[in-house]
Length: 285
Ligand SMILES: [Zn+2]
Image (cartoon, rainbow, N blue to C red; front, side, top):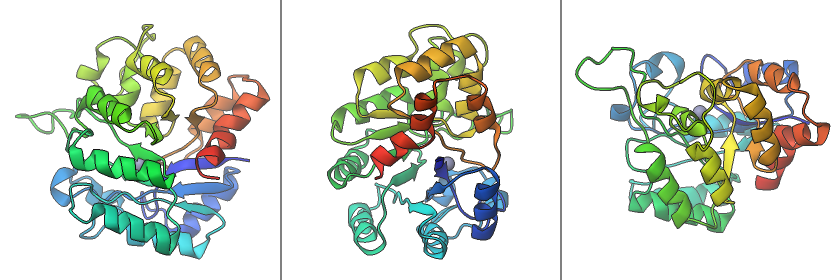
């Protein structure tokens, strides 16, 4: 069984029908559909081309809900309201009760992730059994588009994320995005690139945090995840073995590159099974 624990509807041209066809082609049994209710002034204008958003952001809850209702056995419903909205917890609670939301994701906001309102929302998610997916991004790879400032940062760095994880021990967090995965290595590549390359220096913050916080999981999705895994394959095998109970397969796009990579690693079958579905099913039974 394979569960894609990170994807979005009406994203990159993928309507519900196209997602279902793509899942069948790549042997994916179920997909977590996540919102992206980032306010208009907090995301790159490039999103206008790759989503069909509305005033609730690039991928509003209504979009996830419509796809979920079309094939409820194929999807897990996610929803992450902006915690700075004064009704955020009430909106999430209503969506859990009315529509069976199981995941709080994706949070991609220009605030420190230990913002008090965010911590309250995350603690609420812990009480309700919803794992939380956030994007951490330093905006380091702005490719010179903004000469007077860096690109779009989200979350305020790995330390702010760590403080949120520490303050919410009952909440399971999935680490995701360039600003998380760059810290697989102890070097400072995160300061100059969203996708640093080169051999992994031991003692990276991701490894430290995975050892310290049992409520932290790894979301392998997106180019940031695959890039980190490809930096140093021998390291990657040890990493996946050590944390085999808290690593989840996901895509955040519609291709099969991560499956091809994972299948070529010659991991024990039981470890692969956990990464592909077992850990996801433990978080969202
Ligand atoms: Zn995403």
